[in-house]
Image 1 (cartoon, rainbow, N blue to C red):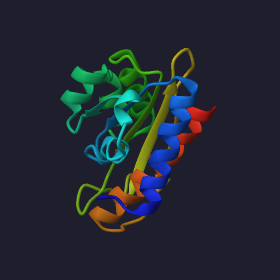
Image 2 (spheres, one colour):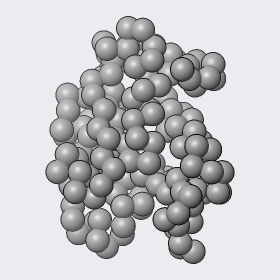
Image 3 (cartoon, rainbow, N blue to C red):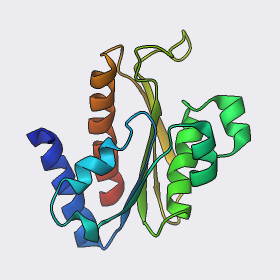
Image 4 (cartoon, one colour):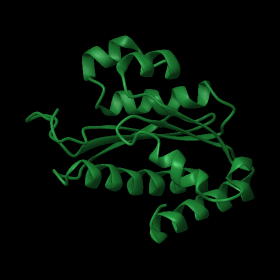
Length: 164
């Protein structure tokens, strides 16, 4: 289902998490479950992947991940503040040790001058540590292109979080 580069990266993440005794969770908006899908596409992933959250709406982010309504209003769903809260909330609402989150504008519409199509915010968190966030501006690669770029970047961030 996924290209060989994505499968290789997903396998590396699973192997590293397994070796360290870590469980993984994902919190996804614009990727709609692609990260969890890439991880669970690998046989045997159930011993490492604890669960995945697809929280497309603000209400879902609030209800499932405890993202504050204040952050959603003040910063918007596509923001580093919300990406951090999503990553943290995924840990709080699971039995996982490491999380990755993604929230962005895949297009074709929905962008603005401040937050254009292709802007994606990522969060990572580990139990006992403060969450981190980064933003990438992939450009208007088309909906599929933005989602694929976000998937690959999120997997690299997750690999780094697992091996930290």
